[in-house]
Length: 290
Ligand SMILES: C=C(OP(=O)(O)O)C(=O)O
Image 1: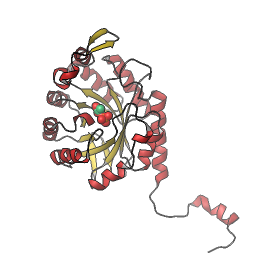
Image 2: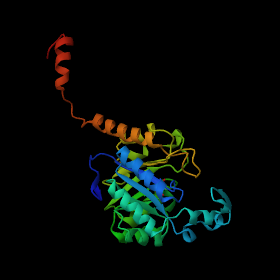
Image 3: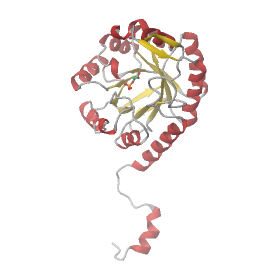
Image 4: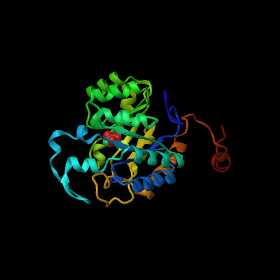
């Protein structure tokens, strides 16, 4: 089965859909967000992704008053969350820039009002963060949009994934295997979950959302059939903010897209053939012709 996201078709043997997750790595700065969009476009990614929250709703109660050191001084976790959100005009500027650079854009809404906010901006799809997989109210709001939904499965049990899919339906659904550790260690990747999810939910395209250091694990995910790959991006892994360290810098993203395309070309179709380039070596090396 395929899912159409904007002008791209995901699944069904198509090239892996590469999502450059800007998330909160813009640190609340539109110019930085635009630079990250440029990084994604220059690398050949298909889409950029953001995270949209209504901080007063999406921030867990027990986290709100915890003090946080930020580049803007010490503030509560809730105020920090407010500080890094973009408003509608800022998103319009970001959307214009993404479209100008030939990229799709969308976001993970972390609460119901954020769904309406993103719908109003005409996003091509919605992403469900692993943390939101059990948020039935959010999933219901996403279902009624009729938009493609990309559902991440980190920090979730099989039963929880079953329940989320039951609610969302499988039309226009892309599942993402994920492990929600930052950075993720290789022995937590469990990439064999990619074929396992494909077997459990027949017809649903399965991709991979990665939080590891480096490229190998994401590339292996494509070799195992991931139809989409999402990775966080940053200008500099040492920047302030929680996701920068587990993100790819510009050269890393470029190499990732390059290597994914090489792997896709190399996977072939599983039909045995003798390539024209093998004829000369065969003539030279094979002692017993058929
Ligand atoms: C945290 C997110 O996703 P994931 O669970 O795939 O990392 C997100 O999309 O906001």
